[in-house]
Image (cartoon, rainbow, N blue to C red; front, side, top):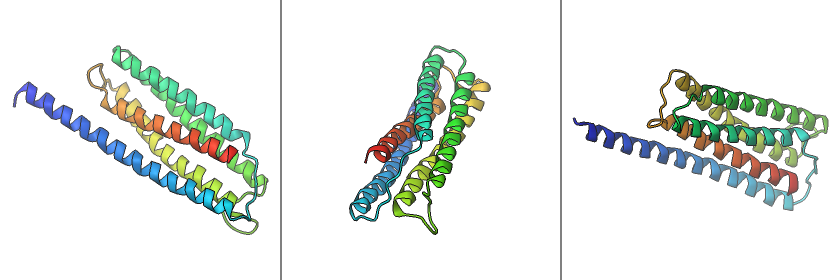
Length: 190
């Protein structure tokens, strides 16, 4: 098998992996579209507890935006054959901080009397926790991808010609960022 055939196979493989990622993100998007649609319909029926979204959710939004900018920087760096381990590690830790802020937000919601289920719970709080919790579950997948990508970067597995793992992780992370920004404004202003 010649070098051109191997290169052609790599191109096909890379396209297939990106297409799988887009299908997965489309499924996640549809999941959240269904939840937000149900939120709107259920809110219109009444018996809805209004809540104040804790500032922790704003802090987590800012953290996720900063992490996306660092990830863009990492992608530019790899294209220039520069080290990307530290930027990737920074994005990973910002993702952990995002998680910490979310947990603090849930704790503050609990102090407001907003619960997922049980005595004193209301469907508004249940929707809020399911929406934010579902996003957090998907973000954990992004954290795992970031950790694997950072380890691969430390092992010098990426170059200016080969950085598919970084590219796929970046696309997914940015998707999660856009999804969170949508959810934040949806929950804050709807």
